[in-house]
Length: 376
Ligand code: SF4
Image (cartoon, rainbow, N blue to C red; front, side, top):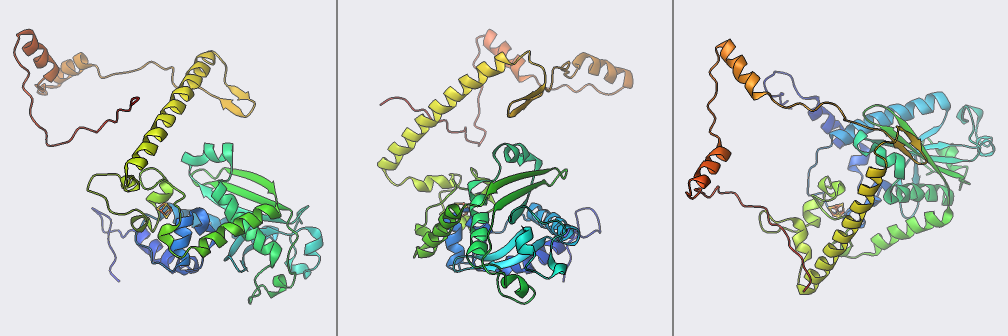
């Protein structure tokens, strides 16, 4: 095996090794629908139809997430006696549940060595998700996304309907049969600083059924290309930027054009897109007005927690800029040549004042196209 080295050194990149190991993980090789594939209907349809991925993505953040995930779950297993990474399978879904924390009544049906150190008040299914600092405020404010909730309800639904999968290593769990689940718990871990945020919701059989219907709808699709896309495409939704099917999902368009231009087929599509544009503009304008008024009102308010929000302030320090005169002096003292940079603004001013035309030339680049929408 040839090992690529990092630029300017003889040191190999460990990421090559990490990507190779990741590609051999059972989850990476799995072609059945895992719950994490249920984030987008079109993507789930590609997988269910056995279509090979068309695109590579940078997986480093996901691999780091896997390492953190494995370490934390193993600690939960050895220290708390929680059931981790146990497999489930029903007619719709197959995968592994991150954590099941048994309640006392269910735990009592197992041999004592398999019981948790501390039983939960109700049987709890937990999903551990790692997130970057960039998304942390969003996670704390809004919690799990609709797709994340669907994933966990699918898994929990299989556990409530069938129980653990009857495979070697967990037959004693399969013998418990369908489980009476009381709670879903999301545990978010900040990948950058380890912060932990927990969100809990009651288990709702109706939501589990809806998640199951969603999968059935995907299964019934005869052509994955007919399945609606749940995201707006590369450049607009990060999930598409990293999707392994992005070039299959979004057709080729003329060079330099956004892939979303493929969504316009006729004047009716243009009419609707313009209506959407105007509606978006109105929402932005109104949102901006609300935000600006609130900002002015808060200008002298002290930092603190007010209801669901924390107020803090940044900035307010003396602004600095390069001191040109001091730089020239310093050049002269140090015996450095003072650069004689042409001053285009000054020259334009001189030419205009002298009544001479300002010469222009083509740069070879295009100006950005600016849309203009007015009433017809
Ligand atoms: S590119 Fe986006 S819309 Fe298309 S399948 Fe992937 S996630 Fe779904």
